Amino acid sequence: MKTLITASPEEAARYLRSGCTVAFPTETVYGLGADALNSEAVRQIFEAKGRPVDNPLIVHVGSVDPLDELVVGSSAEAHALMDEFFPGPLTIIMKKAPAVPPVVSAGLETIGIRMPDHPVAAAFLEACGRAVAAPSANRSGRPSPTTWEAVRDDLQGRICCILKGDRSTIGLESTVIDCTTSPPVVLRAGAVSLARLQEVVPAIIVASPSAPRTAGSPGMRHRHYAPSARVEIVEHPPEELDGSVAYIGLDETATDFDLVCICTSVDQFAHELFHFFRRCDAEAIETIYCQRVDERGIGMALMDRLRRASEASDR
Ligand code: TXA
Ligand code: MG
Image (cartoon, rainbow, N blue to C red; front, side):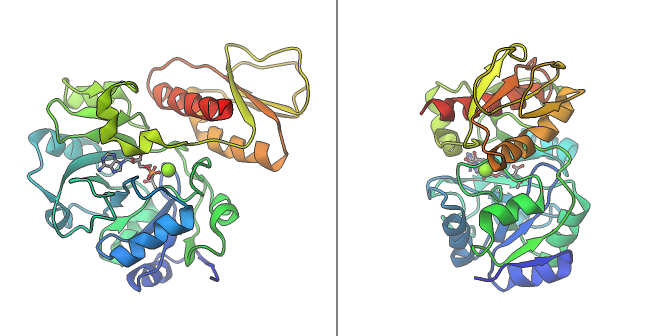
């Protein structure tokens, strides 16, 4: 398949409306979209990514208008969160309407909804004129793409179109919150912090990774966010090294790493992480040392991704 690369949201939307897969930029990471109500189109997403079919997709909307067609019986908490955080990096799980094909939600009775806060994504979704199912636009198991070039590296020849935009400003995926239960439960830490969520709904809790309820969050079972290199979480940059090594963190270092990324804030660390992982793979780095950060604000999402990447290294 030839992959067209365009900067035109309207051209990209024409592909999507004709039943094809289109990658597009958002403020978190790039997504790989298809018409959410066209099960054949949605199936192509799973095929292109090599994604396990038991991992549900997030449905992206440009406004709240299509919600009536997508969800049923949404809670007061869900509405309060939508009012506060849409558009933005929050995915809200609600009860799914029958019109949404089972392939989108991997057979679950629920559906995740997100409204991106990004001008190109907004123009694209408006031109599509329909809801767009979209996971992150990486090959399954790889770090999410934060640039259109990273999408091309993973998916060229496997998808119809890439809508070009700038590098994603946040660089980590959205927070996923299940609002089908009371209190709502955070299934995936992300760009909207727990503290910000609790300002709106104080009772919100975080799913513990070992609790059986993560069964409700199928994506959490799968290998995620991992570069080919081994990832090690460290308190401080190491001083003695062997082989081809890289470091990303907040502390400066005098050690002679092959690649280094010093960040001036946790937000910048989050913004750089997946991009840095991909640079490390391109340079055949063997071990990436990542500095631990406080689990406050986006630090909670950052540590979640670092832990997953380092666990994948242990396999
Ligand atoms: O920032 C983001 O969320 C990006 C951009 C493209 O919007 N998308 C993204 O999608 O990260 P994906 O598919 O890579 O991650 C979606 C996560 C998965 O862990 C999935 O299991 C979970 O959300 N999820 C989606 N629908 C769900 C549902 N109905 N119930 C529970 N978990 C769900
Ligand atoms: Mg993903």
